[in-house]
Amino acid sequence: MAEGGRERRIAENEAVFRRANESLRGVFEDAEEAPLEGYPFLCECGDRNCTAVVQLPLEIYEQIRNHPARFLTRPGHKQLPSETIVDGGDGYDVVEKTGAAGAIARARWTRFITTSDA
Image (cartoon, rainbow, N blue to C red; front, top):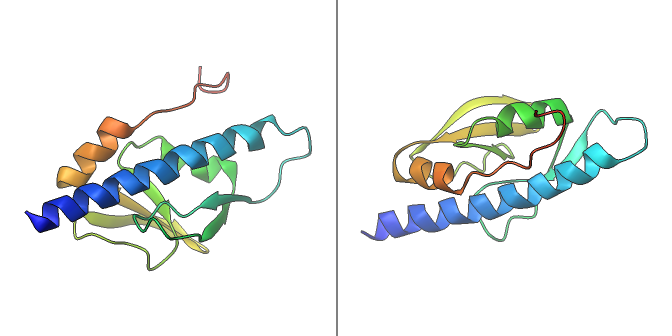
């Protein structure tokens, strides 16, 4: 039971970081400057005290965000046995949730709709 509570708390924390990154993405997409090679996103690990920043192109962020149970993290920030590293690159990992954490991630998944999404 204690492990289930921990898993739920971590999944909820990750959803909060994901919402913050969606707001950042909106700001970056609306910028009038030339596109950058990498944009700063927050690590979406479940540690609510984590302040790590992950630099990555908007296109890669979009690929991650298209999957409701996938999260952007710094290498080494995987927290739960129900997380699997499914992709990664220079300075980032993509973890996918399964089980209860995956169900929470899917339930909390929201997307900001932009004209490029339509």
